[in-house]
Image (cartoon, rainbow, N blue to C red; front, side, top):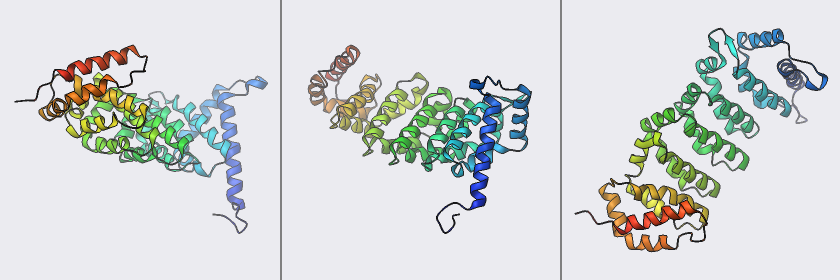
Length: 314
């Protein structure tokens, strides 16, 4: 891979330079040069698209992106996202092409495993999952579960970018996500619980915030019902209400309130809340009293009232 001096072999270096030039030219054909008032030529653009798909350039370009120079990687993102919005034929779009060539999407997911291309891969992947059919492909792949590791990587920028994509997959297409979560509930939430127990503050807070958003979305009613029927989930949220971080406490509150507000509490949930109602009511009386948030205070008072009325099941 490298010569004795520690540099790239000349043939690889030359190929990389040539690829960089080709990408610059491709970007020029697509966007022109506004500074020199050079407008894109539709015929040249169509010729470029034809070459990209006739020669199946996208799979190799994504798979070998790590070998490219820094600016060339950025050009790949620009070109890819432009092509994604285009027709391939009269009745065949780039989205159709990617749905058929799923390995491209999987390579983009796995790009998060390589810090030098993670941000580039994320930018392309998020553009892809704006389309329902492509989001479904990613969710249904085994590689989706790698996100639970990617969002906890030690590289903060990569972890943040991965969580941004992770969140989009769960929230962009609600019906697709709800179907996926229902079919894979045990697997997904066993891994999700690990995020909630993460030693990484940012991961923990983001995961809690996303969880409350998911549970409160009408599209996820069945998932919410199943989640708040678990006494282990309730205990986890009660413990998080006492977390040393006030932000974690606050996010946990928005999940905890779903357990309390449920009018059809399963017996195990009702028993835990009823047995601890005095402690919970006293705790909530002073919980974040300095927060000037009218809705939060109304919700807190509602929970105190609800908890105070609970009775142990016969």
